[in-house]
Length: 438
Picture 1: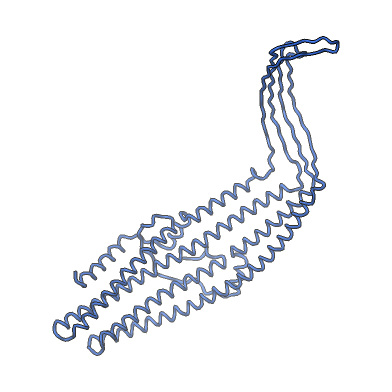
Picture 2 (picture 1 turned 90 degrees about the vertical axis):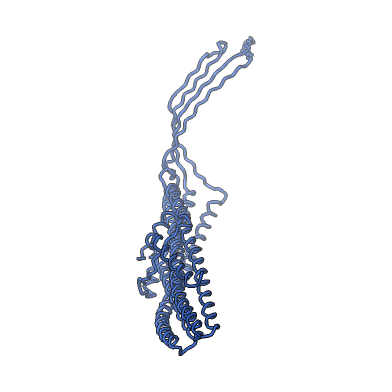
């Protein structure tokens, strides 16, 4: 198969593949990830566990109701001696006992520990939602990065195909020129080598594109062999100002919110530990049934008792060796550490926002520069192509202009998606990643 037929086959394969593939939009990718991504599904289940833990059923506010029942059988040899000295013996004396009861226990007061623990469980549930949000945000960043890598490689493939078509036309021209004796065999061989190199680059990029699609499918939690095409259009949502961005981040950034929740949880831990200094008041009641059956030689052949019992108890741990005081002191120290950590997180957040904003602004500048660079190289290549057709420059100079245009297009693609990823990082830091327009 000659080069012309090979190139035609490549274009036909590219057209057929693009026609058969589903179009995976960014919105669809996000929806698939929220539904199927493995890490997100686990995070959602962890939220459900925290929700169950925060239920009234796990609060200690409800009473405990227990039921007991039992039966015993005894077969003994008895010898009874009375005060007057008379004695009796009974062999195989059988006795049976039966019992059943229903008991109710409830804590009326435990130093408010139960109330604080219930509030702590509610805050723990809120913290689990923030943990899930962290996983969702990180997963979305990873998905967008993978999505834009597929987009970059898709555009790179198209640029290679355009360059390949140019090389093919040059090879055709070199072939005709050689056949009519207008050029040397060397120029024909150089044209063949360039077509071959462009073809290799195309197949290598196709392999990278296929790998990137499988990576994205894995993140979306669907079969990795699912083929698709994607959107390559990029829009930028906002121009950021540092102080506005940082003020928003101090409120909405998920790491700051998690830090605040941990501080709240520590306050409840301190109150729970202090509650151990107060008494505990319990009430209990039961309704029971007891019955025993004895042999006739014993005074009572049958005994039966049943009725209601109730009581109240007060338990006050006046001194426990100092363990409660130690827990209270440690809770206060841990609270001080959390305050220090929050200051550290805020300082790091300020640095991260400043760095990310600078990266974003630099990326936009590079993008604009690369756009101008592509336009310049297009004009340069157009003039070079005209001069080549007129025989005013060599094939080597023409090839260099072709390579310059191709590299400029690659650099533009890279700059475009680098800027978009930098923008997404700013949205994450400001707590707006789940709200921004794709």
